[in-house]
Length: 307
Ligand SMILES: [Zn+2]
Image (cartoon, rainbow, N blue to C red; front, side):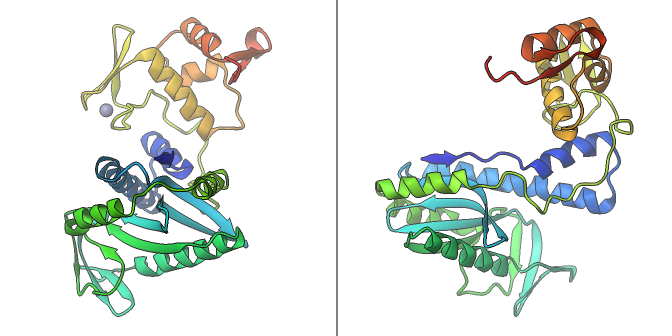
């Protein structure tokens, strides 16, 4: 049973939007591409679980917790009656090798040892559970999801699942999937309630409203090279076609995420969306979907939760 769904982190969303609207530095671009790739890998793992593993396991996708001022993140937590499985999913591609405690790409660039990260998270998670008075067996696994990944000199006795071993791992999980008790459900709910939404390690470049490119962004390929068809649809070369009103509302969400301190006004949304619709239509759309504060020139919109 899925207790918490996965969605893009705040950092990934911001970088995705910014990448379309400004030139990111090489460092920010690499960070963005890694996050995007990691996210795709995690979704792939979620799908495998959903299709192959019994619904009896309580599934928490993406969990960021704090224990004694230390943050730790787990990609996927599976709670069974007698064991909690922690999965760290890596979407690495290409050839890597291990030399002792050190991991490298084939071109000899050292990377963070993912096993060390896994062990650190497991240890913190164990102490966190202990502080809640919950004791159970914890098993953690490093999951390599990409079939184009190869690890030379892979250590044999480490908790690593390679792509060819995923089937076997799913079978193992299935065998452990028996109905959980109330205390497991309560634990799952506690973990989700304590999930930290905005990571303190978020790295974003500085940006300003004025300097970002204004246009509707394609929802599928995140490009701004879209055209408007008959004033009704946003069309992109990637084949994506979206109704313009939906695309504008989506752009408002993007604007609100990037500029939480700015007010949502008709003028700004008109400009933010690349002036693809006239102001009156934007005004009508915003009025229908948000609560208006103030009048005329100085009015702005807020989310109306009562609707
Ligand atoms: Zn597209």
